[in-house]
Length: 431
Image 1 (cartoon, rainbow, N blue to C red):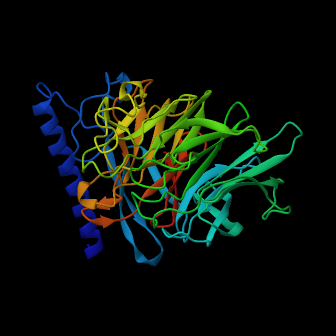
Image 2: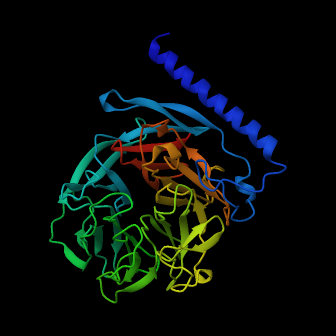
Image 3: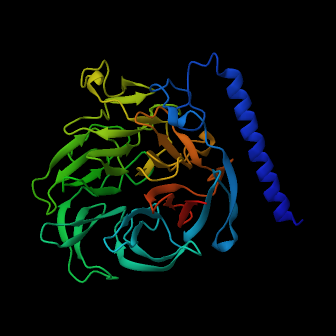
């Protein structure tokens, strides 16, 4: 047995020991425990509500060896019965995905963490079920300013459009099936503020996310210009609604500091949101909301911690600027600084581990000692009270193996997810 095999076996034994210890401690503490971990990491917070029957039993994760270009290798831990493969690699800061009407996967690539114009959209084409990878990765657009997400929509005339959210604008291109580059000039539907603090986590939020609703409306999220401040521009920290051509624009929701992940499911808009950074390591919670038309979610005056919403004493003492009792509670709260990004819902027809669940990409805290995020989590049941780990291993001590960014349903019992740290798209499937 060579050194690599020995190291791999030691990792497997270490993981097994961690599982045994965790189960033993949980068994000892269960009768008297009054608090439950919300999300991941060390935060202890009140439960959000009764645990649904579907997520009482934790998933048993087993290690899977990952080998990437450049000689990098590590374990990712998946539920028993699932397998993982590298579907595409060699990208940069690969972010959000969308399926085109001709069944190809379009994925954004922001190039780096810096504000830049080197971003791109790639087409992941010709997926090979035997090799479990895409045979072709084609550039569709290049030279883009921080492209975070794309969406497709076919209007009443039968014209299909590709919507592209950049830092400073929302554009759309006419799309024809099978094309590998746009043939027409884009239409600019709306522009956004593109300045603020120097980009850093907790500072200027330069991503924009676009999604098309069941109602034929377009929704775009715009993050705040700061960690916690009173904005001078109304569009900051909001979600906009508009017609497909950009007309009839209005504010659908406000008070969302950085709602990066958007999904429209069964007539309801869902959004992940990242809380402020000035309240310490354990609060506020990062959140997933069911977005209500016209609601204000509190930032910068209120924040959620556990099941309650509190006034931020820096901006709302003594709760004179906003009554935090009127702020909607989250659908699910995650541990502070978990950084929830993309998500997808798995309806009927999937295996029991996925059927009727959400998978959410927790990008992870830049403060690695917190051990927050760096995983995919599952939300089960109609009113999930806490996430289950679904894929872990992206953080080993202070070594970063990856940072999950988005999740996309990819057929029965299978999905894709992106890793914007390693520039990889993974394919996960049930054996």
